[in-house]
Length: 145
View 1 (spheres, rainbow, N blue to C red):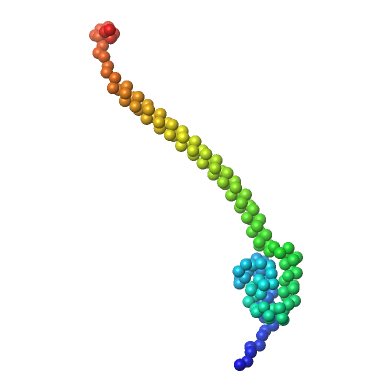
View 2 (tube, rainbow, N blue to C red; view 1 turned 90 degrees about the horizontal axis):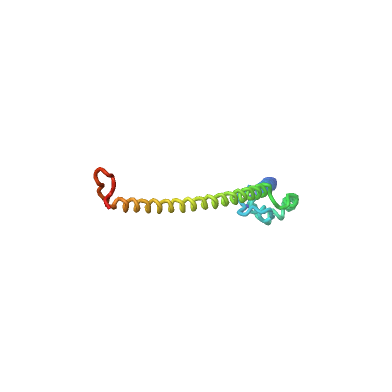
């Protein structure tokens, strides 16, 4: 059984491409996307012994670039900034929602009071219609008494 000859240049290109994807924050194979040598190996899909054995300088170059980038990919930094903005917006919306709920409670209370007053007025009107009217005297317009 013969071994397939390795294409070292293709391996180097794949490692460099994986490094670029990780630094850009757009990994394809790496589940986490951290800027570590382990994640670089997972991203490029080449065996660890091959990467560290034949291409260690590329791993060192990747580590140097991550240090220069302060271990935070630009995409991750952008997402963090967007997260801050979204949290502030959410806080404002929650405050507005709380104020609207207070207004709704006040309107419900007012509607309940008005409904009770209306019912009371209807009862008073019904009671007033049950009053027996006395006949008037003819000609005088006065009630005998």
